[in-house]
Length: 438
Image 1: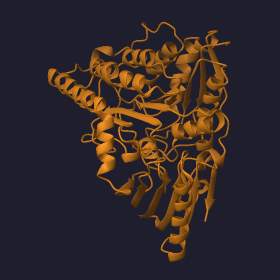
Image 2 (image 1 turned 90 degrees about the vertical axis):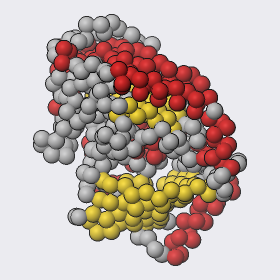
Image 3 (image 1 turned 180 degrees about the vertical axis):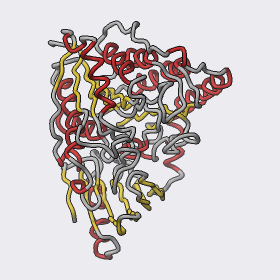
Image 4 (image 1 turned 135 degrees about the horizontal axis):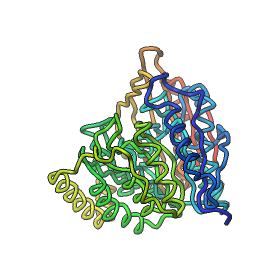
């Protein structure tokens, strides 16, 4: 091995929601300047990689774009996803021990079905990378730890029925912040109950509370799950200076998290304190992932950091105990969920695309199968101020689907098409790695 950490940069010069939007290219340019100034790219333990274009097959392995994914994304999205894939290749080909993809546009609010952009996200970068690794390297069990201040609702949605993906999100409580989700009771559907772990933290949580959750929940849960690989969905908007949230994490807090988590791959998500936080947080994470000393990475205005209150500390300790009890009893709780569900589990949802002005109505149905992870059908329709109605009926064959479920979901899509209530009909077959319009 020639180096310890691979870095991939892609600031997406040609992509922005608007010139003054928080999600803009300066997010990475200030970080890049700081890294160059500190001479980090000259260190023998750091190796830089260029991103590449993801293929549409990589995206269709994860997403169903309505009417198609090509009409919803730009080349910047393909390069952002390709940057994460380049990081994965570097690690899995054993060129480096770990990798950090500092790319944009971000992705963790993008769900399985995509009608537009929500939460600055159109396609889910981490999910695309995970399914690429499974297809090309044969990985199975994956742990994704989302440390963005906003709940990773898109990543949760994509893996909510997958028993081989442990998704952990610790974030500012959804009662106080977009997207308004990510509560303890969201634990996965019956086929994968207990593999979704949401830890909603109160505003004002500091490094101490953050690391109490990491030490007593996240790390033990990962040890129990025994994943083949650990992914950090590395949002940095928990920082005390971030303009879009209300937390109190420091660069040292993030760097120590990276040191303890030992993620194989980190992929940048949010973080909008462009000058006061991101250069320091990113440098701290890079040094920690490379096994280098980061103790001197301290923000100049560190004295402004709010202190965590005693009531917040008490709340976090209670939340830790609650999750420890759930985790100890997760197999029993999973069996209870399956026994009371019957053959099918269903949820109806309304999903708002804040960046595209769309309202989606969705009915998702999962077959509960004792032989496999079942199958999924999704009936979806979206309307918006600048769009007519867009609708689709989708069938999904999971990776480990049994022959009966694989045949049944195809029959369900064909039956829906004969009735003809939707504009589009799709089948996403993860067994055969085929995405087709029916």
